Amino acid sequence: MNNNVTIKDVAKASGVSTATVSRVLRNKGYASNEIREKVLSTAKMLNYQPNALARSLKNHQTHTIGVVIPDISNPYFMRISRGIEDTVYQNGYNLIFASAEEKPKKENELLNLLFEKRVDAIVLATSGQNEEIVNKIKNSRIPIVLVDRELTEQNESIDFVAEDNFNAAFELTNYLLSKGHTRIGVVNGPQTVSTGIERYNGFKKAIQEYGLEEDPDFIFNGNFNQEDGENAVKNFFNRNNKPTAIISFNNTMSFGVLLQLTRMGYSLPRDVVLASYGEVEGAKLLKSPNIVYVSQSPYEMGVRVGEILMNRLMNHSTEPVIEKFRPKILIE
View 1 (cartoon, rainbow, N blue to C red):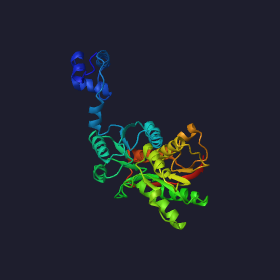
View 2 (cartoon, rainbow, N blue to C red):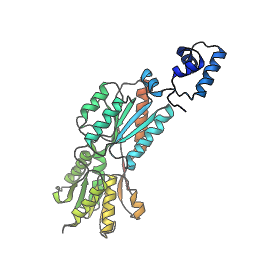
View 3 (cartoon, rainbow, N blue to C red):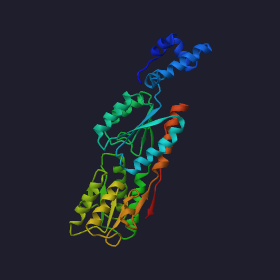
View 4 (cartoon, rainbow, N blue to C red):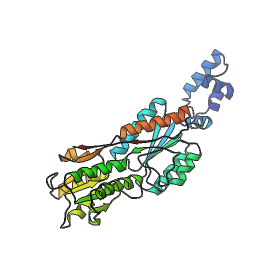
């Protein structure tokens, strides 16, 4: 069956004008019962399908929301996305997901693509360096909400939902210090994104208040991926002066840390304590107890993002929203 049947095809087969077919299919305007039945039966016979793209362009709405996240495999970002979806779907909106893979160039391409495809709104967890396209989207009156990460050049007119990264990292470090750990290996995220910078600054503030100085041998700069966690452990434990604790500022890196420690025969917490920014789901598989971690609220953050989007799209609100969630420190 031909899937490219148009209103003109239905009109020709029905023996009526395209205007009449349009009135019947949209159920607007007058048409006799006889004509109405004939048009509808002909449309059904020809398997006519309305052109959703043409309709959306005419109405200036696609009922789609683009979501660009840095790592689609990270459960944290998928829970944020689920919270968004559960909120917007009930209002007739669908999500288009894209992963930038922590690559600013790819993120820029994805944002431009979504902009060209006329999505109704965009949610972005940025990999950094894309202020220009973000501001372009904002100035075009397409709602854009930043989640988890803010721009390098902060724009207070853009909606932003995130965690209090600085204080959570500060408290996580303080916990280790209170337990007597002074040789702490740090697995950093990239210092080009706000989460990486804020968490590292929280760590530095805590050790400074404790009267300690940073030890470059115990700092490993990663990029929020599992391999970086593995490499950090190799780096720390190939030294004579080994750390008694490791603090990892991302759940994916933390799993890499846990995996490599297990491979090398170290036991937690007997040989080393692991503190993670974010719950390490893989810890349950490896049966590793006593991981200290920052308990996050990604689903709730996603719901809040969805609420902001609906307020923008349905209620046409203009007041910018900046909201931060306060994580808790837990022991698994």
